[in-house]
Length: 307
Image 1: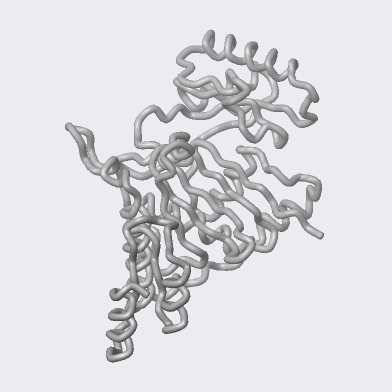
Image 2: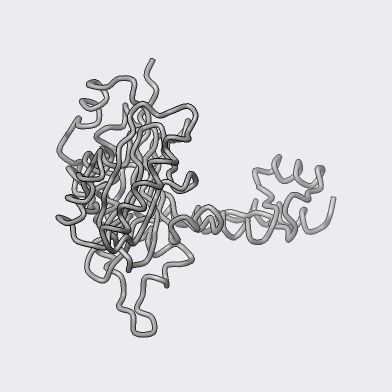
C-alpha cells in the first residue's frame, strides 16, 4: 500500500476533521488503494476540478441556509386549463404566456389572429415593428420550421410574411389541426437569457437559469435550484452563471435590471409550485433582460402525462 495512503489513514484516525485523498486525474484510481480508504471510512476523489467542485458544494451545503420563500397563494390555473382540454399536453406560446402572466411573469404584448385583416389590425394596435409567428400546440419549435418573422416594419412586410408563413404551414405533413398566428411586439434590445422548469425523477421540479437564449444549447452555462426556492436563490442563480457579466453595463450600454429578472424567476417558480402535480416542463427562451425590467419573448408549457 502506498505510504501516503497509510499516512492519510493514520492522520484521519487521530483527528476530528474530515480527510480525503484527491488525485489529479479523473477516473483513474488504484482499486486496492480505494478499498483501503473506504475500509477506513475515507473517500478518494478523482480529478482536481471535480474534487474541488465537490468540496465547494459540501461546504455550501453545511452553511446555514436561508429560509424557504413564503409559499404563494394557491392557484390551480394550469390544472383547470388542462381539465377543460385534457388532450392538450404541449400548450402553445399564447396560452402559456396568459397562464404565466397571471402569476406575475412579464410577457410581451401580443394578439392571436386567424386572418391577415386581423393581423394588420393587431399590428396597428401594438405599433410597428412587430413579429409574426405561427401558433399551434403541435409546433413547439417554430424557428426551426421557418415559422417566425421578426422586425416587420410596415403593413407590406407583414403581408409578405403572413403569406410566406401560411404557405409553410400548408406544406406541413401532417397538418396541425389548430393553426393560428401570433402578432407580437418586437423587442429588439436587451440581453437574451433563458429560464426553465424541468422534472427530475428523483428530485422533482427544478428551476434553471442561463445567459444566451438559444445559445444555451451550446454554452451549457446555467445554474440550477430545486423547488421551492429559498430567499435569495433567484439573485444567487443569476450571479452564478459564467456569463453574468453580460448583464452589467458595458461600453455605454446600461446594466440590465437584475432585480426584475430575479422577480421573474420567483414568479416562474411560484407558478411551478402551485401546479406541480400537472406540470412537466416550462421553457422561457428567450427572456429579454432590459435596463428597466425584463420580458418573456417566447414560452412553452408541457403538461404532465396523467395516469
